[in-house]
Image (cartoon, rainbow, N blue to C red):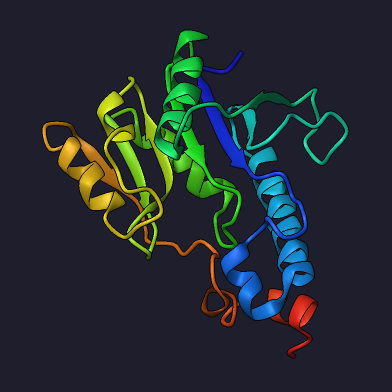
Length: 203
């Protein structure tokens, strides 16, 4: 068992429920295909990370999917909002004896395994590491002890999340990583040639 645990939060890829804001521009089918592509990219990146790995499903745990049960622990998210669901996942990781626990989403195009390995290393000298997203949230959150406050009293999905999180951590040592953009709306994909050529037929 590694001392590091990487949590991956995913939504079950279902038509009409994946990337709904992106779907307003590209349609439900294309949005679903893009989300499946991002899921596979997240899996491929996470496979290279030097840590144990756990996938947390939004709806129900799937057995025969892209996440190999021999590599990924499989759990269902539970809790009344995103914060409590993340809190429960982090708590579970620390209760199992992991010393560093980190979460990423599954809708980032430009997150690398090196980024994640580096974030784990930063927890040697920092209490918390945050990967700031350009929309005011974060794409990565890691800690070496449970900081319960950061998961509570937030307006999840809004541009105030990271600012409020940093306020909770003002007495802790926090490392901010490079800004990255998760993919929520059409504007987030137009500068990614691979996605545009593959799914929007724009060369």
